[in-house]
Image 1 (tube, rainbow, N blue to C red):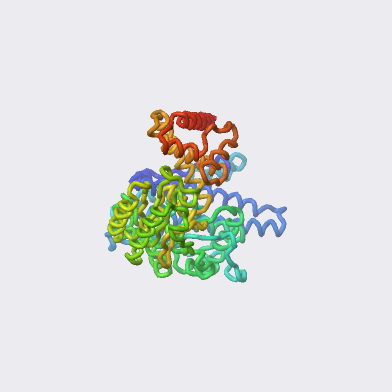
Image 2 (spheres, rainbow, N blue to C red):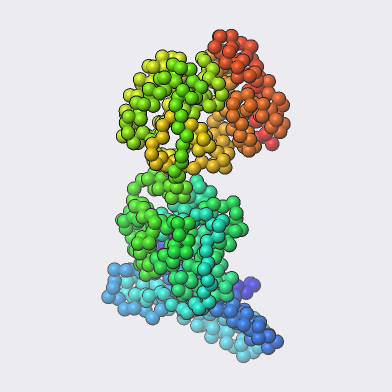
Length: 599
């Protein structure tokens, strides 16, 4: 808008009516009207500039293109303002006479008149004729404000109806269609959210951004960017195919500029035709999600009056928003629990993958004969339950190094359907009996749904990652689908898990005693393993982990004894000397950690 030009002041009745809107709608309307007034100011300046006698033909063409673009934005903003202003009307009075124009059209006229008065007052300083017109212009503004106030009162009371706000302006061309635009190889996955008002589109997109690292984009933003790039004033009047090509072009550019972003979301899908065309161009790279919920549920969640939600629905339906469900890859009933919604979203954002697991017998894992036999019996028992038990694996000491009697334990992972968990419990009871205190057993029971919904603890994520890297399993059912765990995810999981590990290690250090040696040592190793992951070092085995941790910046060589020494002292009950050395190493790590965070 022209520098120092006056703001747009709404007449009193309209201002009071706007104040009754929901905060979100009121804020959106105020922003829209401010933008509309600014666009009118830019239009005034550009139209003045194009009349310059010294402009070349190319400069005139540039100004004309800018005027077309500004007019398109002006119409789009007026329609957006009418979406909010239309909710002020009493929709139940269908017999009331219809006014000749919408509320936003009158406000647009008021904006232009405000600018005309301001420009006239400036010009009147040197032009007598213009100065004489200023009082008449102020009179026109007073009349327009009074008429607008009267119209608002009639609309709110149901004495007058407003016409259809759509302007159907024709801007731009639809004949210059590029050939064979295809998704960029860097555009790995895009989720498009559609649905009616208050169905949860923004909430869902924000969840995917927060938990999956997606980049959120608005379809309107992408189209406006494309239109500006192509010199098109209004992309919405183009064919569905052309709009889809413009969208894909902008998505490609964004992906090429943000090469580390693997996931994008786009909102809000209100047009079934253009998103259907985009699906044809992108294939499975684009996943269209339609969020469905009853009108009553959406009204309750929004906190807005039913007529407000209904008015928004009517606008979206006029564009084909309700028909997006017919072309959607996923239709989600969002009237249920948040847990169910988020589980579906996680599966869509990061779909599970089929993995060929390496199956081994317990006898090939370096276990003592008695433990291997008991483990084989357990595996046979759960395998007999059929497809309900999907996967069984040992994730602890086996494979990390040699089995140490009296020290090593069995960390067992069982992935089974919820209906089969009871039978797994029975098999576990028999397994413990067969072990006869020879080894400690720590089972983790999880359902496939929990995994594909990525309800994972950091340790469980690490165990799955090791299986993906080729760590053997005892049993894998046919067609097992598990989430793919990347190193980046594990590094982030380490950041989240480390604080709890440090707090536990500090508590164990305060209570250091022969009986807590094993726990204290294991937490020292775990803390160092997580710290190394933050430094992108992926060591395994306690001795290698503690040696590598000694080389972290600012940390002196740890004085911890070897695993063999600690295990031998623990088994023999001679823990005093080793406990002191482990405690010293714990103190070193805790002091270093405190210093790093204080920095």
